[in-house]
Amino acid sequence: MNIYPSDIDPKSGKITYASLFETNFEGDTYFIDEDLLLIEYENDFAVDVSYHQPFNQLSVSVIYQSDWMEPVFKRVIEVNKEQLLNTLKQAIDIAEKGK
Image (cartoon, rainbow, N blue to C red):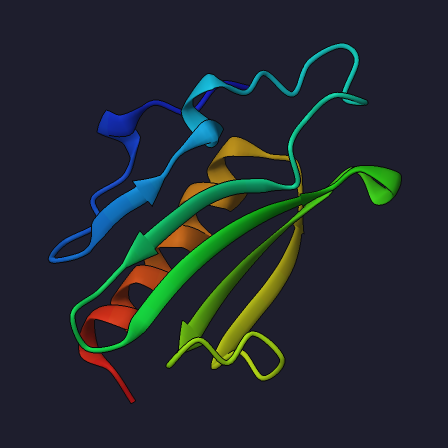
């Protein structure tokens, strides 16, 4: 599974970290970074994608004012391109609109 920058529309957000675009989830996943994608918005929201190696799952979170302990939105999903892109679109819409 490969994700490309053209697969994601961050809208008004700025992608500030993007190892997701260089990550291949097929084969050995031991060396995959936990932090995969961060999109930051001027309204103090951020969208984060993380990889959880022991479970081979991804999490997509919307963070407000750097409160990582209480995300506004969080979904844990399987490593699946369609599911990731759909969940990311949801998260980006939430971050774009704010609370």
